[in-house]
Length: 229
Picture (cartoon, rainbow, N blue to C red):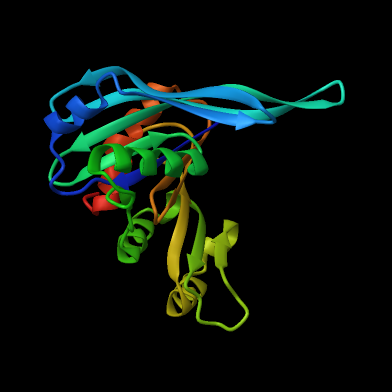
């Protein structure tokens, strides 16, 4: 089983009550015409729940998919349901629980809804030094490291996995030429394997309920992002 999410930055000036007001019962309808056929697409936010420092909801969005039906390709409306959470602490975050492409789409749509324009909700950028420190404190639980920003001509990425992770000399050699972009590790508090990128994509490999995954992202991954582990 694979489940994923992406964490985004919310602007510092984000107001919890204002966001709650704007997304409460939000609904938008658009008409898209394909081959002379008008298709009504709905986007709405439902099941709003508010706690002390979190707003969670379900983001529903209709998309058009094309189905082959006995030799004819017909447009069909498919409704995507995605869980979202807004976190409000010293730093504010939006967490979207889906695959990367859908997460990015929803983040941009929420940015327009809440702040008028795209780009107010933006990608996080974890300090590479945080990844380095996390790995060096958790070597025994790390399975894979990928490095980017490589300065060796013709090489875009370097990786360490398996027995190579035990080669300290090779690890420091790679650090001379790049930065840790992606880390795969076994968490201490739940069973399974987690992948985390510097731009906030979280992938869990293993058997886990959604609520367990959500709790792990909020209580553990956010701590890694902030360097407070």
